[in-house]
Image (cartoon, rainbow, N blue to C red; front, side):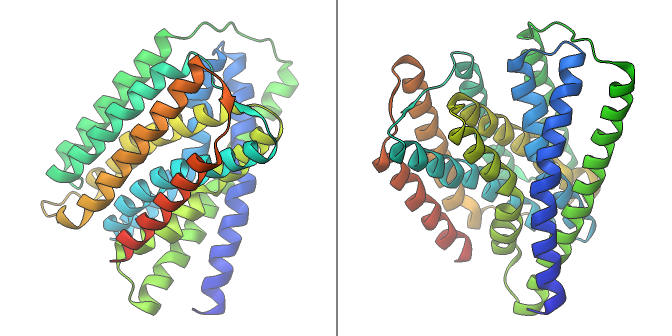
Length: 314
């Protein structure tokens, strides 16, 4: 791997962490101004902020003709969010000797998460590179957003006009820096692909997926250390829903194709479904009965992620 490739990847990762945090912060402030409730902000705005890296890297990968990397990015990011990020969060809570809890509003998103995961796996069996698959995913996303909007109970928050203009400027700059970060990571990943001859699936599943999941890792650890445990699950759920229903739609919109070998993805699809259902059951139970975070559950998620890396490589 050349020095330039290393610089691209490291610079992109650092910039993604910083810009995603800023995007999340200023998006929440903007959303509050227009009367979005905490539930709607968490489900849409924060989820968009943490999923934006996947969106932009997938767009650049598609433009470069590496649509297969997008599928690897989506599946890899969703598995990493649950098995790696949530597993790490549970480990932190275990050593802090604190309970894991989640708000009752999370139940709705858990149902949406499970349904969207099966939709993603179904689309991958049919053909994720088809324009019809992309339109179906986007239609599903619109339905989800409408459901979220109906749950909105927020009221507008007054913001000083000067601060409002400055806020919108910061929001635009954070998006611009995120686009640059996504381009750097994508170029670095493509260089790795060319230099070592590694298959697109594995590069998308590791370099792109892990790199773009770093905002979730940083945000989740920060929330866990601050005691905002329910926000951790909410952010990861929203991010996975948007990854599946929006990011996966990108290849079909820009480079529609009739060929896709889904056979090689079956093991990863099964693993994604297993960790998603296990995660959903665990979080749902903790909504009803808060309990100290389990180190065994944390290990289960970590082992699942290691298994997924082996499946992606083979």
